[in-house]
Length: 260
Ligand SMILES: [Zn+2]
Image (tube, rainbow, N blue to C red):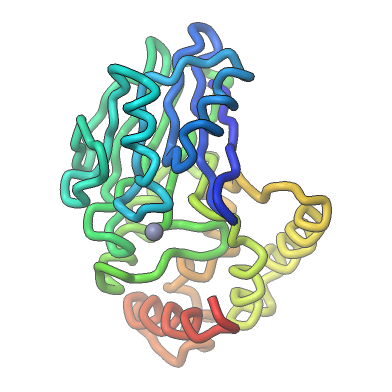
């Protein structure tokens, strides 16, 4: 299984998930169909499916274009999100094959939108680590805004559903927001050494114009404040005690943090 990020728009990521044996592939959130298919061609991949994380235009807005360019492409998306061009609506825990060796499991991770889906992808090759495509729910070092949901839904999505995946699961998110997210994280969890170290690495990556994806679920649990809402440091930073109150307070602080 090979995963290829395709940068789109200002800071979005589409991805190709490729079965290296057969060339069968899926495109995650291909908002720029031509660019994504050009990348697929360079990789020798045949896109058979589109995996849509949520209905926002910068994620689902290329679906009809993909259908125009690829007859018979299957378009997956959360049943509650009514995504553009959807042919295969999915809900929590639906599973389907992408190829003979790659399987996909849909995980409902709602709050940013009410039917947001993260896709957990595994391969039968024992050398391949699993991967999860988290759209605008889990970012590296952060999370999406609560447009259509509540703090307890984001808690369920991040701290129950995604946190339960194997720690070595690679995390591929929908935007390159990492540096800004870690700037905020350092204001609420400044003594976290893993976070400080991650920031040094991220600054170098961005200086070199390199992507900061993927991280892993295990790493996010170490430095992402929104996945650490039960920790003393975050309780102290927010002045709240229950994980859901900490989640709400953190999001509020982040929404008012230097513009983003
Ligand atoms: Zn979004």
